[in-house]
Length: 449
Image 1 (tube, rainbow, N blue to C red):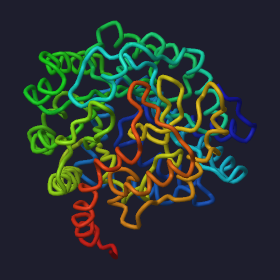
Image 2: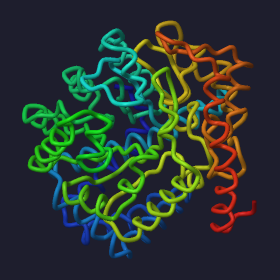
Image 3: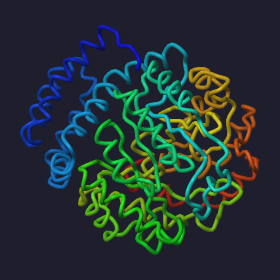
Image 4: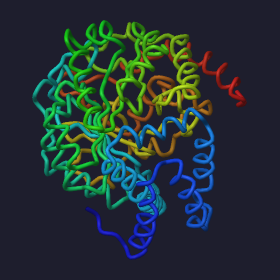
C-alpha cells in the first residue's frame, strides 16, 4: 500500500466523510454529494464530471440503474468500491499520474491488466490462451510488487485475465486483502466461482468479476464447450444471492453478433444481476485464430448502434472497447489508460497486442513506460482522427507494424511467435472496409470527416 502525503490524507479524509452519506437512499444522498462536490472542487477540475452526474440523476433509466446499486448490492461492498474508485483511483491516483507524466514525459495508466496464469480449464474456439497450457504464472510476490509500483504512480485499478485467472483465486483474494485501497476485477469464464469464493468476496469487498458470456446457451456452448452456459448461470445466481456486484464480458463475432446485440440478451443479463458489460470484437491473434469469426463492417456498425440505443433504455452500464473510442480520444492502450502484463512477465501495450520490449522481471514499470515501444504509442496516439477507428491493429494495421519494427519489440507468443506483418495482414481488408463505414458514422455523430 503506497504511503500518502499529508495533503493526500487531508483530501482523502474530507471525501471519506462525505461518502458516509452513501448509507442513505440514493435519491437523498446523491444530490447532497453533488452539492458538496461543487464546494470541494474549488479549482473546477471536476466540473464536467459533476455535470454528467446531474444529467444522469435526471434520466429515468439511469435513476433506475443507480437505485439498483443500493437495492441489489451489499452496503459494505458498495461503500468500499465507491471509496476506492473516488478517493484512491480518481482523487489521489489521477494527481499522482499527472505528476509522473509531467516529470518523465511518458504515459501512466489508470488501470493495469495482468495474467496470473496462462492455464485455463476451457478451450474456446479461436482463443490464444488455449495455446499456452499450464506453463506460465506470475508469482504472488510479482503481482504484489506490480501493485505496489503502480500505486506509487497513481494506478489503483487492476484487472486479471489469462488463461483463466480464477485458477489463482486464492492469490487474487490475498492481493485484494493486502491492497484494500485498490479495486480488483477479473475477466473470467465464471465456472470456478462457488459459494466459498462468494464468501471471500464479501469479506474483502474490493473484487468485482466480469463473466464471459457469448450469448445464450447455444452460442456460449458452441464456442466455450458444452455445459459452460449452465455453469455461468450458476455463478451469476450465487453472486446475485450474496448481493455481490458483477458484470459480463461479451466477445461479439460474425456468428453471434445478432444475439449479443439483441434486446432479449440485454434484458436477460440485467435480470440475472449484471451491473456492467464489456463488449469486445473478435481479434485474429495467435496461431489458433479463426479470421472467419471477425465481424463485417456492417456487423460492427450494428453493435455501435445497438449499444448506444440501449444506453438510453436499459439499466446496464456498457463499455464497447473499440466503438467507444470517440468518448476517450482513440486508443487507450500503451499505458495511455491501460496496459497488459502476461503470465511470463512481458509488459505489452494491450491484451490484443502480443509484442513487448520489456519484462517485469527485468525492468520497473516506469522503465517500461519509457521503453521504445510504449513511447512509440505515446508519440503516435491517437492513431486516427476518426476515433471510431482507434486501434493500431484492427483499424490502422500499418501503425502497429511500424511501431513494432521501429522499437525492436518481439512477439511474446511462447509457442508460435507471430510476425507482426502476418498479424496485421489478417486485419487489412477489414480495416479498409470499416474505414468507409466508420466515416459515415463519424459524420452522423456531427464530426468532420
